[in-house]
Amino acid sequence: MLPVIHFMGREIGSYSIMAVLGLLTCGVVITFLAKRRKIIFANVILAMVSATVGMLIMSHVLYGLVNYKTIVEAVRTIGSISFMEFVIRIGTAFGGAVFYGGFLGGILGIYVFLRIEKDVDKNDLFDLYAVSVPLFHAFGRVGCFLAGCCYGVESHFGFIAEGNIYSPEVNGICRFPVQLAEAGLNIVLFAVLIYLFRRNSIRGLLIFIYLMVYPTYRFALEFFRGDVHRGLWFGLSTSQWISIVLFIIGAIGITVKLSNNKERKTWIRSNRQALSHR
Image (cartoon, one colour):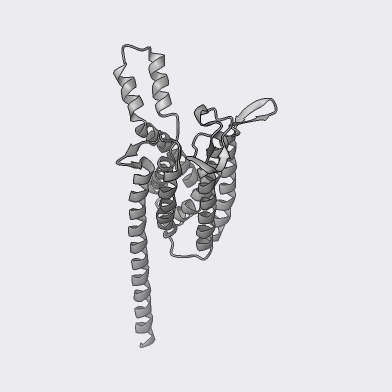
């Protein structure tokens, strides 16, 4: 584990470094892809800022909801603890971040932007979002591995955790590198999505492809997670339940998109034939 990096006499969190690198890399990729679709650069920037704000807010909100017991306990102790202690407990409850909360918050942020800028093609923006999310997420998962904020189950294959300041009890134990496995799969998904984007596939389809593919391997990888504080419901984690819902949404979205595209092609073909007979 390498939770902090010393640079010029200062300690910088390794997760923060990876997050910044991810944002910068995504910025370069999005700029390149936006030019291919001839999207106004200012609109791309504003949409991504709106998405980022949504991601930051909702990632912490979902973390708080998962840790609702801490919030309930803090509320129950009002009057018996100081105000500062109450604030600290609430801050702790919302102090972490959950990826799915951030992902859904990003979608919400883009929708807010589209409500204001009605002339922007929503399909183009969501295609860009679908391509950039797994790339940024890959950097984030490497940051998780370095920081030790999440970790895998005990395993004969993997890495022995050392220097984990978030969960010291896991130090000295060999664990499956679930964060690195997810980072690798995210890179593969990014490569597939950017290939489809460059082929100018059905616009607006990529976000639904993402909603089917990522939840599939996320659901499986959850069984290899060792950090159990993320909430369990009927034997499945919170993220697994969300994965099921998003997979269904993705399947429905792909079906509708492909159906509409087939109907559109049929309509164009019939009109061309009608014109040729005149």
